[in-house]
Amino acid sequence: MTVVDTNSEGSKKSLNFIEQIVENDLKEGKNRGRIATRFPPEPNGYLHIGHAKAICLDFGIAQKYGGTCNLRFDDTNPTKEDVEYVDSIMEDIRWLGFSWDNLFYASDYFGKLFQFAQELIKKGLAYVDDQSAEVIAQQKGTPTSPGVNSPYRNRSAEENLDLFLRMQAGEFDEGSRVLRAKIDMAHSNMHFRDPLMYRILKQAHHRTGNTWNIYPLYDFAHGQCDYFEGITHSLCTLEFEIHRPLYDWFIDHLQEGDYRPRQIEFNRLNITYTIMSKRKLLQLVEGGFVKGWDDPRMPTLCGLRRRGYTPESIRNFIDRIGYTKFDGVIDQSLLEFAVREHLNKIAPRVSAVLNPVKLIITNYPEGKVEWNEAINNPEDESAGSRSIPFARELYVERDDFMEEAPKKFYRLTPGQEVRLKNAYIVQCTGCKKDADGQVQEIYCTYDPLTKEGGPESKRKVKATLHYVTVEHSLPAEVRLYDRLLTVENPAEDKERDFMDMLNPDSLKVLKDCRVEASLQDARPLDHFQFLRMGYFNLDPDSRPGQLIFNRTVGLRDTWSKIAKK
Image (tube, rainbow, N blue to C red; front, side, top):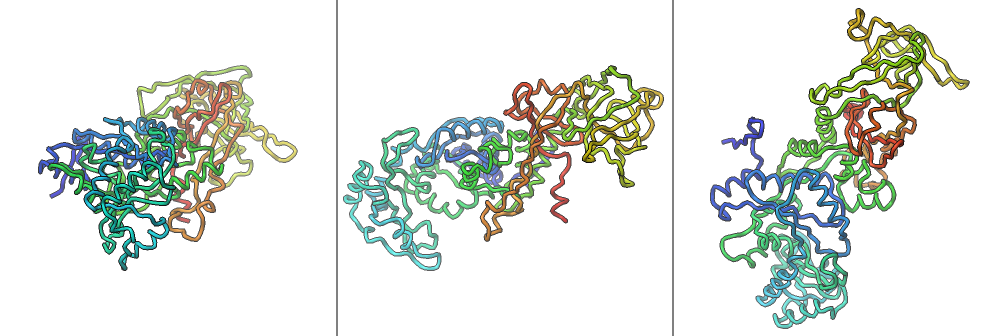
């Protein structure tokens, strides 16, 4: 039987496997019909597009089934965490369109975790090991050979408890002792071979200060935090699937009553020409290869926001790719399609000339200015229209002119006619060049009968060009962003460092652009379609009189064609 869901537009959509699990749990009355999820980022970097997939799932499941979703910061490693990251994560979640029911930190539970660890010690299920991390790793064995018991494994509960309390009291050096769970050094799952629970770390914590000299590790803290919060469905990416038995082992020794959280794994998001490792992204930032975490070339949510991506486009993209049990790589063109599709609906159409050359209409009256109505967005009637000027001297794209053009070049070339958008048909009569042969001016004549509504307005020409007037246009800088890497799937290239894969043409800055005057009122991050050029937004670096625009995406997918060659 196919399980279906009805969306807000009334069409039916198949449930993903996680939604099926949730609905089955509800039918069986598990956890008394409660649904509680959580999004648990570590505050050691900025969120990226991969995190957006988890956010949409965690918050989306709670919304769909009338449950709750907590935001919980996994702040168990004070050496890498910062309040800056906490603030940025909150901002990104809100920007995506979600809000949390409760805000927690793993550090909220440090006391409970410390108490639980003591209970395991008293039961003979945990012990203090005096060996170094290197020796412990060597004793773990391999997936096909058993590990070796630590010489400290059979310490008495009393001795272990005393040592553990002294670890917290700060009596021992970092790296000198750890607390390990006592499970099975011959277990087929390597994570069951006496995993580490606590390490000595004499570092100030951004919330608890110097209260703690020991900090729990992820496998010990995560499931217990879920339990303390009453989480019903702990949704993780596939790399945590092998950790699930250990997650359940700790819950077995913590559980009271019939409630218990359930860990479910789904495929992580991998995108072509993109890296998702926070460590590698940090390398780019600290090495100056990008201009910060919000550089529009970065896959961070703040970078995508600055580039002009919308929350709706990202949510639509996540919805399209779905959730499965199989890892794969998603073509970046699908993400670009999603933002292109949404911006087409909401972005006003404006004129901008990125590589301008002057066009003079020699038979148009000097000093005359006509104001013509232009539709702001043909996809949105409510967007209205605006008045745009037309005059004798204009700027057009340099690429729209060729003095000696091939047969299928339909734009400006001597003797050929084109239409100027919202205005007249003009015929190119020639050009003027400088001493180096660079075109300085293009000359045309216009036909006054060809204006919209005129007797010759229906006359057919093969090209319509955009323009701005010399007198009314504004100077602007335009930043053309491209893919950060030149390699489609960097994870497959084991021979090269990812730094060698950086695209040297990922950013081109055009300084002498001209844009229509209506853009003087644009606000940072406002979206626009530059006619024939693509989708752009106003960068926060802009200042009065210094407009800066970022290209979000082109009007068409050009990379797919390049990749096929």
